[in-house]
Picture 1 (cartoon, rainbow, N blue to C red):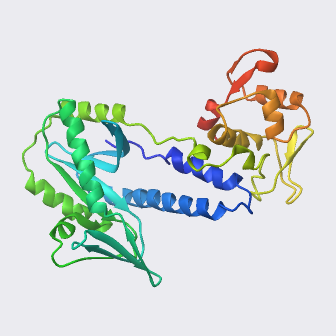
Picture 2 (picture 1 turned 60 degrees about the vertical axis):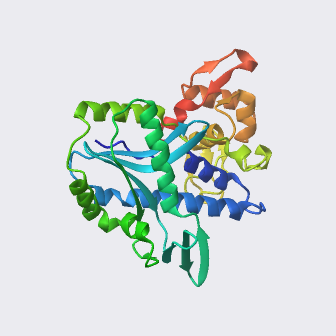
Picture 3 (picture 1 turned 90 degrees about the vertical axis):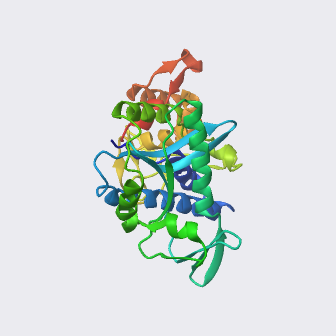
Length: 324
């Protein structure tokens, strides 16, 4: 069983923030770097899908679990569940020369002549194991061995560890080594502990306990919402703002026209500003000439609404499920 891997809402929101931050904003580059880092991490997780096909068919996969233990949340990139053991995968998509060093338990990357230190992913995944075991115990699940692996997914990465760092040699692998390592764990734990019924119960529990990291992105990065660009971006030339005329959106740069370009702009509004919008707010945000234009556009989308007349609020949540 596989739980479908979706783009995290945090990455989606961050991409919208980057798009609507003006080009000359002093923090534009900072947000672009953040987006690249988070997107590359997600790309690394996606790249492992190819190697999952070589694992036993009865293996169950859960991706992107974020669960609360006491007052704090812990997050696991991927959880592999079998009847005899569970494996937590901490997935890293990083190029360069990657060194795991055990004198100070450091993780050091050398790339383009630059040396950087990062949080040691072995420590990260060990903490995840600690919290997961607590959660399973609290919920009275059967005790089952929990193994941890750090998977380096960038194809050009060179991975090395200090000669004495035994844990790194046991737990750090490249993507192509997942099948062999999994087979080794299966030999280590040959005795089934969970029945299929218990596995299904465990999966339901973990999905129920999991919640996405979904912050107010502007508040998180301390960006004032009036700093963000208004209007409808051209779907073809991307950053040009379109004008609305005779029932269509028109781009003065590339001459593209569209009847539905406002849908993506309203999706941006739902993710960055508010999940509800009034006619007046819509007219201002889309650069329309009147609230009556906003009224007709919003009505055409068949959105649920609350309130009457000027206090009517349209609920934008359904747009986040649509492709425009």
